[in-house]
Length: 245
Image (cartoon, rainbow, N blue to C red; front, side, top):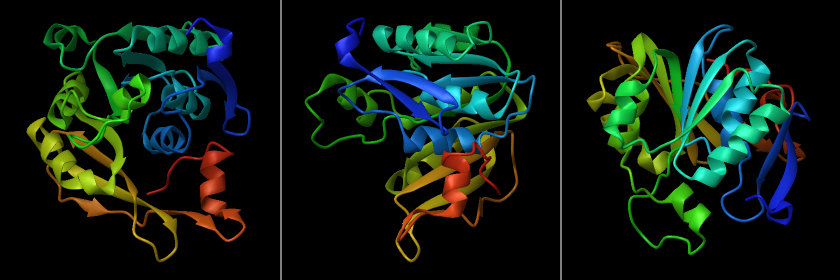
């Protein structure tokens, strides 16, 4: 990852975020921005991102919400180093700590400091044919289960702290069960529709530690129209708006 030729320099949120990321593998983009837009963090709070990759998610969240303390965990040592470099390049070195670690590591879980919110874009397929490229395979096919991810994310949260996941719609049942097993409820579901009238392919799933209310489905977000992104999507993707609902 130290080879500059293996990296690209990209911009997110209309240039607010500078992101160096691997040229090959599963590249950060739409999912990271949508996930960050849905995290209900407030200035001065501490947030945890698990599986941060090169840092796109926490960088987009920090661009929207100032003065956060950010703890990020990434299993791949080279990606973790890149996330640290990206934090520094975006002026966040003093507010971001990136740990090289695995969500299945119970010792690491027990050492996590108290956090107000936690979020992740976890690998989502439990089986099937995995991509041959290592970084893409790690980003899309589970080694740790959704139960492992939910347990790790929920562990440092105070009561009513939020866990946010972005996932394919096909993983809804498994993700809701994992969050419930981690003691999180009052689930909020936000569908992302590619276009009006089409089935949602991605969704944001958010639950609260110790939450007991019924699950609810939010109006969601239509991403595309004939000429490009919808105005509501543009507000999030370019203007760093929060996901409403």
